[in-house]
Image (cartoon, rainbow, N blue to C red; front, top):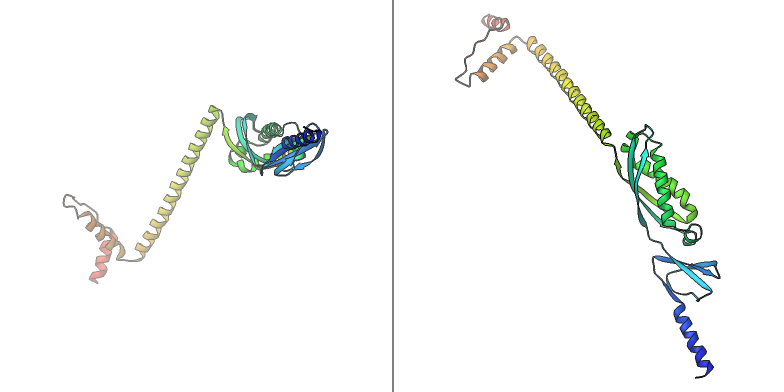
Length: 247
């Protein structure tokens, strides 16, 4: 076998082992002699052995669980908070060159930021304004991770766990609030009923026969049951109505 065929075969083997596949959702960060030389787009790409190397970066959106964090609110209430953070890589070269492990770095940054933000709000704000607090966390983490080529798309607070004694206090507070509303509604109903009764009394007193008709109507309703015995006093207004009728 001539040297020509040996070189040809060796070149073919080197070409074959130099082919690298980059999937559609990936980008390759290429280095030549240890220096960054460009981004490898999806498809088959050549990476020459020994003198070149590369690292694939997944460009899809990632969801990372932020584990439970102990935090103390502004009003000195101890809580446990966990969340999920959604982010994606915008610049693959920064994710490789600027930070050692971008996924771990984003997770640690999110944990620290979440504890700090929870410490800046009261318990009532934490429970009632989760979306606002989550957006604040997202904004801080996104700004800090921008140098790593990372875009934080959203942060969701999944759960806020309170101490048992605080749960009992909140339960009692809610029960007291419900009783307060019940008393207010009942009082408002009594006021409306009293106003309506006063209006009805004024209307009846203005008409000489109205009270007489109302009395007869009441007697008719009660006398529908034969077992009832009715004893009642005739109001003076009724007698006066009869006197007017005689005249």
